[in-house]
Length: 83
Image (cartoon, rainbow, N blue to C red):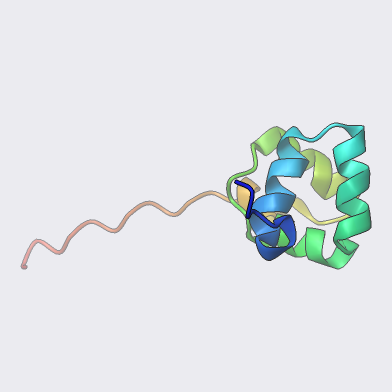
């Protein structure tokens, strides 16, 4: 992992820090990524737990209906019986 650059993988990095980060990590996140970029990740990243997603949605004032990890996944379509 010597070659890992967190800025090269923003969604992954932001999601992991939002999910598992301590205060120092959150401070680093805020210094490294803009609030807009963090919000974009909240809106697109499904790997956050519902608890973390809801917390950060409140912090960043993102409506929960816009948070990917809080939206229901549509059921898989049943295969057509004819084919």
